[in-house]
Amino acid sequence: MEKLQTTIKESFTVSGTGLHTGGSVNMTFLPAPEDHGYKFQRVDLEGQPTVDALVDYVVDVSRGTTLEQNGARINTVEHVLAALAGLEIDNVLIQLDSPETPIMDGSSAPFVAKLKEIGIVDQTKEREYFEVPYNISYEEEDRGVEMVAMPLDDYRLTVMIDYNSPVLGSQHASITNLSEFDSEISSCRTFCFLHELEMLVDNNLIKGGDLNNAIVIVDRVIEDSELDQLAKLFNKPKVEVKKEGILNNVELRFQNEPARHKLLDMIGDLALIGTPLKAQIMAARPGHAANVEFAKKIKKIIEKNEKRSRTDEKRT
Image 1 (cartoon, one colour):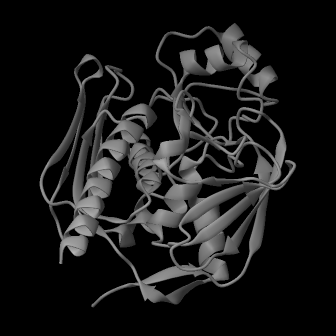
Image 2 (cartoon, helix red, strand yellow):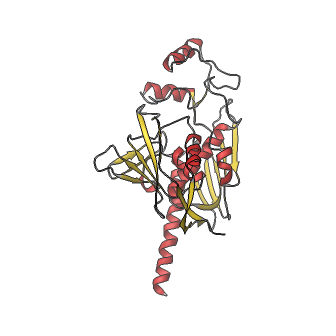
Image 3 (cartoon, helix red, strand yellow):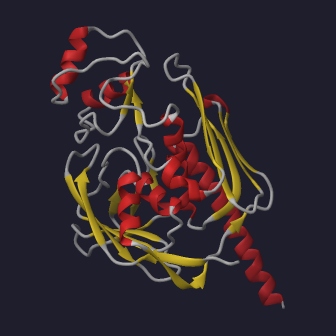
């Protein structure tokens, strides 16, 4: 049975703080017509320019996935896009009054909850998938990244992460169908190593970080004085290291929550292809940079196939 395209029943707004800018942001989701896809709109800028959520417009992957088009920039789009793609919503306009989406709790769960509460409606046009016709691979030998999309009449994803960390170890996460996204993946939060946190603070970044929206992995011996400094920085009465090797700022929602979050990021980044996929995706050590390059490779194959189809139609 063919699936119809979907949108949301009505508009709604979520408000929060940008992780890196530290600024407040209001983000409004609006229903959109068939074949609209995902678009962001900066309502705080003159002319209220829009940005297509397509891999063509990715300009930065250093601390999340950033898009820029028509003089407008949108930072950290992956968690919002993962929520939409994970719920198989096709057409939405997302308006922001700031350059960065709100970090919320560091996962997609707050967006998912609100999208489900508002409701999803079928439209009249059929959903068109790209069915991966053969194995599509991407590798980065220097970083040990391996990604492959294989033919499958569904959408399954498996992720493996390995940071050579005795604390984190090697972790795997997978879903066999997007119906599992809500319960198994959407609530998994972003994570970082303590040395990364310190670097971001030193560079005046993560202004919106409050230790409630990230898992902090302690990858070295840390003195009590440093813990006291972190507590002061993030307005906590006390910061400690748990036996699992993470700060006591959060409780893990899953034992392999970091790997599940990487799977969440991949769903969001691959949504930038602009076409829902039917494929089995397997990825070792993925990150935003690799996800985006992999998405570009798949999108080029889609465009090549579409061009060939148009040429064949003209001949007939």
